[in-house]
Length: 321
Image 1: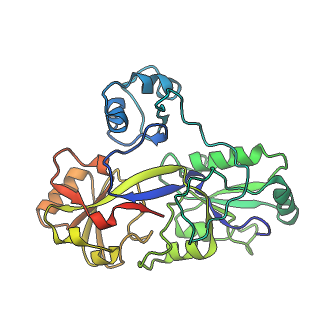
Image 2: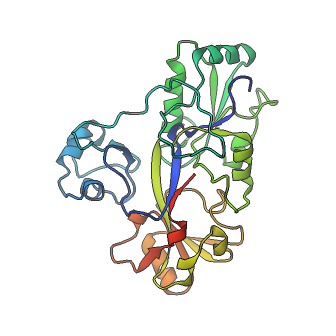
Image 3: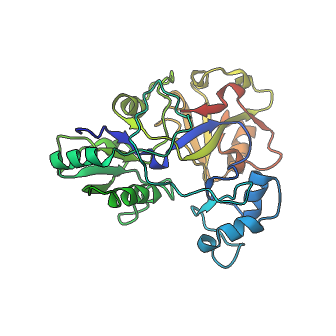
């Protein structure tokens, strides 16, 4: 698209962490409330304390008058050690190009758009910037025709406040695959931005169609939000020695409702031969594991109840791009 390279819209980009610490968030960061969260649980995981007064006071405007009622998807600012608050994502100042060989977790500013001069040139040659928004993943993805989600709202705010106006169109994609479809108003060009999407591991041995297409044709902005996921197996399971996701070929994978993270098959976390089953809760997946109906659980560590006799697969733990 001229001087704007196609960019997977990670203005709310996600970094996949498999296993690792059991905290679901860190102090001095933004955090989206998940099912079952309370302010006490959040501060316990982030600060190791039960006193949520500072967290509530810092977010009273979004929580409301009662600290006992927080809505799923609400984005909270977790205070820093010095009492300050992490900023909302700022307007980018420069373009960012990240090649598959670059370090995806390098601490770079949240920048994803070109300078005004480039935008002006782009506007002169293209009528509209096509922005495809994926459905789901609240509050970041689209939640309806008139609710494009937080990621799109951040992009629109950036575009609307630039010195040189940028004409754009927000398009809600029906599915992840449909996000790559060209805008009917400009069928010769694919979307200029796709958001939000978990960054695929472009060096993964798993060959999945959508990650391969993303790695070949799109650049990624720096991640602004991090979630943790883990492949959990029973203690003493032979899968604890797995060194690569290829080792999970043919396993029965259970994913509980409330899981936030990449789709295991679509996003290339596991081989295509893995059989994925969905359960209504983490307890349901644990029951399936005990009954021999599942071999592995894919979940956010915070979803699992205390005392669950499972462990993350060590070699699959750590940051993934």
